[in-house]
Image (cartoon, rainbow, N blue to C red; front, side, top):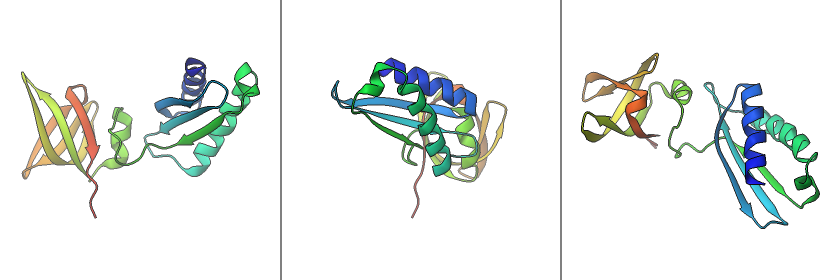
Length: 147
């Protein structure tokens, strides 16, 4: 059941130009709850989530899962969720990040401001200096929440 929903979500995300961030199955076999988190380069609106939900429900209803008392939640990931895809960084230019990345044999943790993106290189302002970090070297990155 879990894989069917994830496959549907991946298919629709690909068709619609979204990124599937996560697909979580909770609840019981008779009363499952599916949480699907999507994002895009430009962000996700409530209308995007509603349309995605409508499309995945159409697919679910064609399977045995549609006969169950299921719950479906489609949402964007919260600001406190780690960033998983390069495309997600674009909407966060000029924001502060907490990130860990591989620098040779070491893993460094820094707080820096994302100031640009060049192909797969992220450009940060760190201690008033510009540093470039290849996306593939980033272990974990979160937007720093400021109040």
